[in-house]
Image 1 (tube, rainbow, N blue to C red):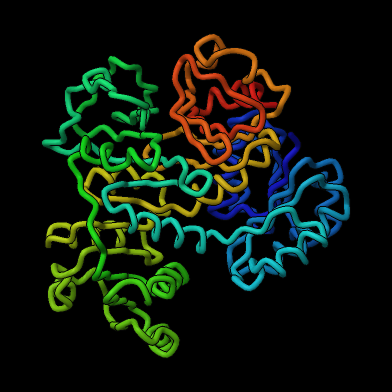
Image 2 (image 1 turned 30 degrees about the horizontal axis):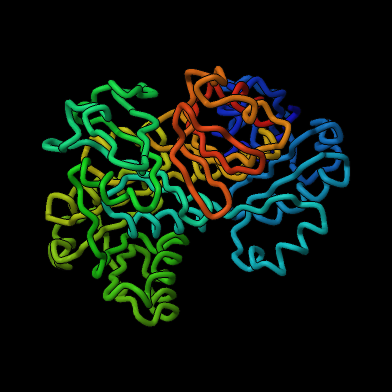
Length: 448
């Protein structure tokens, strides 16, 4: 595909690096030469210096022939993203998508306005991150969680800590009595992602990815040795957009929420706009402050400041003080494994969240959803099956499906099934696939 990215900041740079690995024809625009030079050093891209809202710049970047135009200048440059996306569409780009920071634009009637103007997708990374945090608070035993088709199938991710029942066992050690309820689709181990077979043995510190029916979630979690807890008391560190959205969404369902924010003026705003939240002005890097605010009495602790280091360290401190569930926003991708290794229960990263939303446009139009996963270089995808696609022609065991991918489950109408070797996929089924990057193109062809 011909792809033009407007914005060489953190999100644009990550997208360029990821998409260049897929052998797309990439061009990236920015009016900051230093940022363009950094992207060029790490990705195979053509760089164009100039403002993304300049028609001359867009023309030079070749937007008239682009299959996809991605406007991802920093959040505060929302207008730049919208203008450049609208111009790119009018100039000939087949699909355009833009980063925004205004929740009003995502209301159904307003999204329609942008669709009519030609923008195919608006995405608000901070809002998506807040939704992921809320999902993780519902499933506190997991380090990552995703629903498919309203929960008919679920992706559950958990780390095997010392004493977990699954350590040194394989799925073959757990005979199935009746219908299969879950399927282990991947293991992340020492920087490598493994597609497990029935006799693959799990080891301590493995990150295990499981596709499960709703009825199988409790049994799956019992293998991890982790229990779900009810979050009645929640502490949030960081009163930026993500912290505010989480607090606002949960203020009527969580019994007690305390929010700590370092900036005094932001505290004043939050105190006025969040009626049921106790807002504290302070620096969560200070261990004494966490002790004074009785962090040990809380069920869950979320750190979403602008500093990955602060978020990791405050979560580690909260964990040592007895908090059952900790979640950190970690924007430095190199720190994700470090955070998990230090005991942080779950990590949120806006770059990966954004990549998941945009990556779908580079695949078959039958991809309903996709998620780039923390702790692994793989993706989990939900396909809608084309009536004439290759995936419908044989039983799964006879498909010659790529070894670097695995079919986890099938949703057919109101029913869901765990995929087995003798399963047959039918037209219009929704199919959940776990795939390494090397297999994505091959997998896509099965559904095209």
